[in-house]
Length: 97
Image (cartoon, rainbow, N blue to C red; front, top):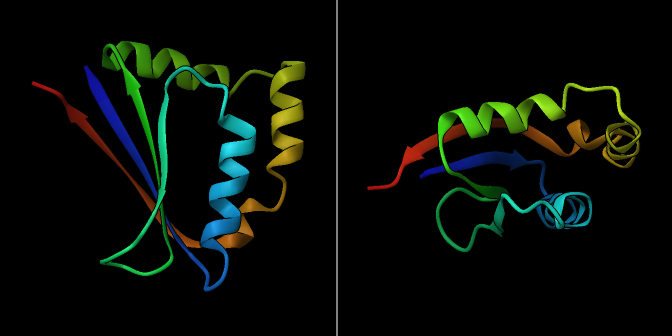
């Protein structure tokens, strides 16, 4: 099993807004485990946690976001401007033993 953390360091006052946006847009994805905001550590941090059976499954899922389907067009429209809500981000991919 693979666990992925997509981490966003948001501008002040934007973390909860970004977390709510992710929840609204991606809340029905079966891979989504949690969307979390910080309580300790680095401020203004949003972590989106997803789970996959393998790296291949992760890559296949990632490919759907590159398609020009109606579903992706709607998602991109809802996500419009989200880049303005954060300063930087990173991704961590873990193998579960």
